[in-house]
Image (cartoon, helix red, strand yellow):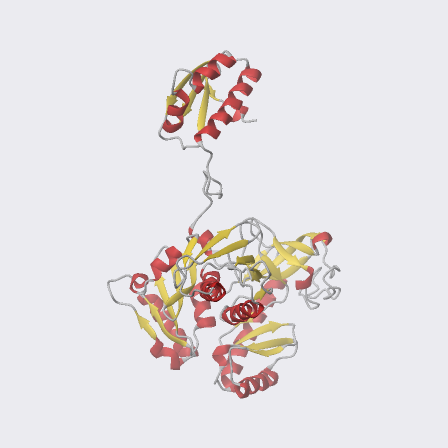
Length: 506
């Protein structure tokens, strides 16, 4: 069994929850006061636009960007209302290319299952769910399920029979992992609370006047305790007394047997430093990631996909190239699966493993990666390793990747990591001057340049600046300004007495 720990660092500015496996950071969750958690919220929304070509609709949910609702996520029993009617029976679950009855302006109850990412709106579903301590209530469904993480077949069958007996008419139930070993009365009490909560949500939906949130899911820490704190967690360590008390009260009510695993961190050493988590976070944001044995990975994130390149580095223990490639790829595969979880990478991922000639080695790598990915709570799907050594996979995208939590796009390079060279900037400036001279007819110009670019522009008898004046019959006065970035220049018109840089960009 994998040794799993939960370490929580709480400050007024942010709360960070680290999940450790075998002492190494594998997942990190960050919550800040200025960014409210919206995952799991239920919204009384309104269909903004139905787009048949995309087999989806955009729904107003009270955010800057409308939410995205695919036809395939519209259930037959989707709660809609019109002129006081609680249910629109015209809504059906059909093949995904058919409109299931959505119309522009239609009120619709939706739940957020993926947060907005970059310029993409939140992902929505009409299959509403309310998670409780021991089970998840699915209003207007009929399914009965048991968490796959409960390994005992006998226990799974016992819980499923209890769920079938308890399941209210017109609702489905999914039994959670923490319900293992609980008695029927515990589950019945949890169900009663969930049904009461659903009645409140339903009343708010019918009373909603316009777009509004009718149910907010619990906060990040509460959600993680609810979802992840099970018997396989060796300890939960918290550095905030108030948060420690809240978690203790919750565990005492839900899983008293797990109380000994909860501890308060009282050392003067910061909690993340004492567990070497800060260094793992820093490494989790770098492009180059070391691999056990001397190899390393390059992880590049683009708008379309994530590319990961595997390099052997100093990993040359075996003289046989094929055996060496297999060993490097196996170690790299374990680190890649960890990095996917740590960075919360979603979407299409392409991995360039070191070439292996033997089919059995490729198959062994594929099978090992499939087993390793089972530790990941996010849904994944992998394709067989190609003859070029490429493995394509997808990973469920629920939240923005970790790098977007801590960083924003650079205003200088706009996310490329590159800025124009001084030579490129002078070429751009030359084109700007020609446009300025042709369009304005003015004969005087004042330039402000970065010191490095200024030196290059004024160096030598036939400097760039003198050449521009001779060619364009223009008097130019230049000065250096260390406040300007390498790729910037400013142009001032003495006649107009104003900055005209943007007027003649193109």
